[in-house]
Length: 160
Image (cartoon, rainbow, N blue to C red; front, side, top):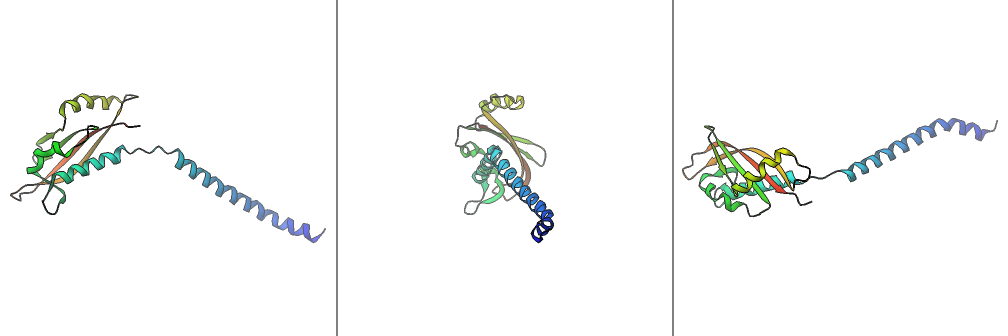
């Protein structure tokens, strides 16, 4: 037996291991690329969060320095001016410490018309529905803060 064939016989198990590692790495790369490409990106939840933050900045307590997470009670009547898009239909519910609920709608009739359709989950419903719950502090000129829960029912026009 020649020395070369002996060396090949010794290296053969190492080559099986090397080929297995190469196939494993290629499989992981292809699977990672496939998962990234086939992913359905839904931005409606992010868009709902941005609408919520826009409302918070519009209603926030303070004039020179806005206080995040603190809503000024005196600005609540201006809620309708915080929403500037016709594509956004929403209801904001404030639930204070005494469990008293206050409702704010930019367009109440449209919301009452579209909201029941969100629960049905229609196939070609041209809107996306989201509900966001949050904890805020209500304050006013008298500096008498109180805690409250806020719930946003947001209906967005489906652009896709």
